[in-house]
Image 1 (cartoon, rainbow, N blue to C red):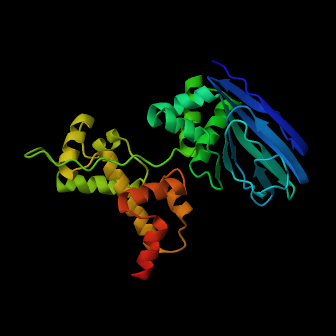
Image 2: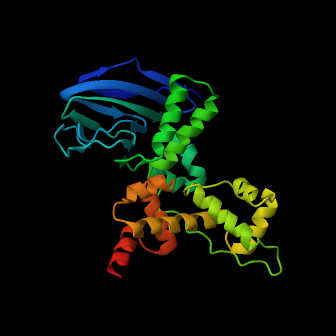
Length: 305
């Protein structure tokens, strides 16, 4: 069903540079703003629906924000570039310097948000996730998804389902979904089963490394060694004791270890973006799952040793 959101906003000194563009979808609304404000400008906002904001420019040096009680000076902090605000969560902003900016807003009906999360998380975990606010200083790869959705908001060219799928990706990448479920231990190879050759395994390693840590589809991996997708999954597990997803996760963590050990100039945020993790928190969760410690702790141990 088409969705029309409700939000109460009071602004002073903020002006639109272009008309607001919007697109109503099934249980969600995408809006794209381009605006400017002078020093001292600000606004108060509260919505009865959950909403996401993603800014496309650096804003931390020009805008401060606070959430909670409607007191402009309470808890001011640099504005995050990506935010998730639960329903009823107020937000205040104040400009410390003149600034031009643009941002994507995604307003979501509560039931639509639960339909995105509940199949994977379960009802109780999904309800907990939509109640937790999120602020990210660096949206990482979410910026690319946001740009794709803006294109479909400002100049629709695809079915609504395409835009809704992008929005669902932003939801799953931004919200705090709790700890990752533990992976099952690698299955032992089947006795006497077919296996990949050493040359094929080498081609897989080289191809994955050349992709820079991007998660590859099973079909892409199978094509590297000239096998059908269904047969590849069988012989890959026999050869490595892992599924292709488990193997890629371990390879990405190995690549992260190389960057962590190589130089202090690689921040965790840089490493996460370089290897295709959603953000630093995603990198940390995956790294700890594989190695048993956080990237920062691992780096300190390497330096100490």
